Image 1 (cartoon, one colour):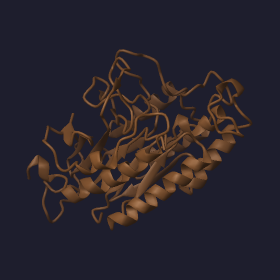
Image 2 (image 1 turned 180 degrees about the horizontal axis):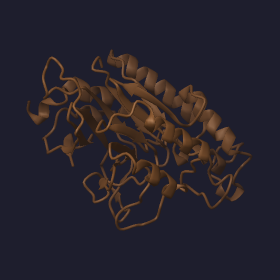
Image 3 (image 1 turned 45 degrees about the vertical axis):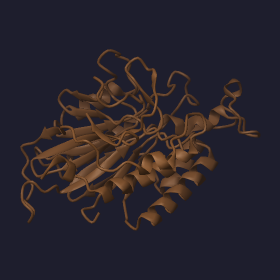
Length: 329
């Protein structure tokens, strides 16, 4: 199987169709046109970043080279099969404003129904889901000087939960027997200004995570974790983006099978922050609507995300530039 055959034109178009619709909600950043996105087919192939495991899943009828399932990971959209494909929108769905959720729901319903396929969608909460606190409640204009503008963390979280039809910001699911765990911040600067845009994970959530990691654990079998904020920072910037980063990393380091995906930094794929490997592996999933280089300078005309393909003995993670129509990283 060639690299370009790993994803069909139809599969690429399904994800692109969703991303195109999502980007319409952008209010503060340069918008990406539908025409630009729909030009993207299978592009020039580059090598996959592959993580190998000692776990051997049952071989499918197609053999070892056939993937068990695949999914896409995008974040920072600011609005954004039968092999059980899925799409993870890893935080920053919009600015936490009710109208943003309404628009995003309409876009997703329209684009998914138009594709003729069913793609399961999973969401994490990002720091921008708390940003209604920076908007004037009457005019909806940007008003940080009157923060929190009558808002509370609970109000912001309730809007996210209503949109995702969940009862907590953290949850989990299984796809083809593989565990996917979604974490999320439970507080913001509204509770304590020192929290800022970092993630706050309660003791309850961290205890839940430990229980979930033990649940159906098989040594060597990949476990996929999603949290909008990275847990380790970048190699040249030791700032941490999770208040409880030490507790979180102590938990995750017990499981070298963990592959964690984060956004938040908007850093372009291929940068030194794209992949961080310690005991477990962490990926930066870049940004679909506003991409930055390692100097945090805006990179024009870039819209990026990840495709993940799970095999019996490895996980391939591939970067995609939706505008340039190329595989990256």
